[in-house]
Length: 182
Image 1: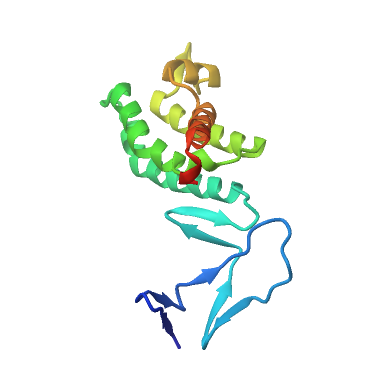
Image 2: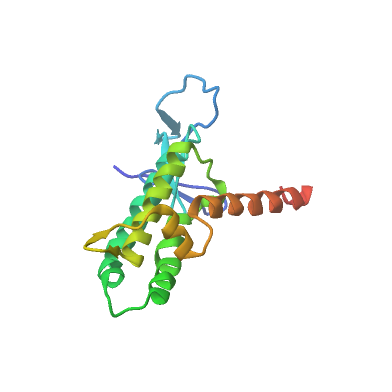
């Protein structure tokens, strides 16, 4: 049975949609339910807020994996365009920058990247770049492009470096923020 709590201000809290999470390293033993009057709320270890996965242990690897999965869906929606021979590389790069990269980098300013996360992001980026730029014909055989060739052709900073720059830009905003705004 679903209940709502109405506050003096008219705010309604829906029992089915409201959960709670305890963050931090020193978690006290707390019950898995929280009761207010006749309404109980479930405790969770992670939840999605504004499209970003928030975890109680502040581990961003799950969010990064989720972002890679969503960007992969965008990529597979466009894979026929990336394979097309009659579409120029210039337009393929524009599609990558406007449809795939923003999906992948959403919320990246708050990510803490581990080496494993960096490797997964690099693998995904190179997969897309290999599809955009295609193989090379050498003599009698075709071969995939080497990583250095992909980055040289792309002429952009790689994804991990872009994420680091984004994090530094965000940290600069935080440092310059007035005390009253915090």
